[in-house]
Length: 186
Image (cartoon, rainbow, N blue to C red; front, side):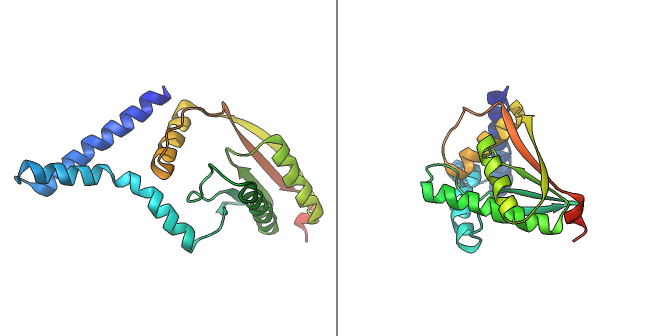
């Protein structure tokens, strides 16, 4: 199922880019059409150099999204998640801890979602929050990683990191943090 979704998406993009190049070139020669079509077909692969440029201007490793009354902490999409040095992994999790603290200052509920989250890492986040003085309840959920979600992740990895990955977890861990009522009144 996952491979079929990826195949259909890539095929659709190739057809769409050929239709766009046909409309751009009109009745031009075949060589012009092929050149324009190749350039349009390669546009998704420009996400890797764009992400590298974005890291220069926005070096944050994590993002805090504000949705309704909740804060969502997740990995910045322009940050690579492969071939990381131990120092870079440490920086990433320090950023998750810092972002969780910032989000808990303004939100009653904070959700941390990452394909890199594990039970041990969730406990480390909780330990950091306790050291920082937050009194929170937590719950970890395992959300099924459906074939459609795996296909989207596979396409994102292909376009942003220029590599093909087929092995994925079967579940996506999500950590939900909720301040206890005594913290909410501060």
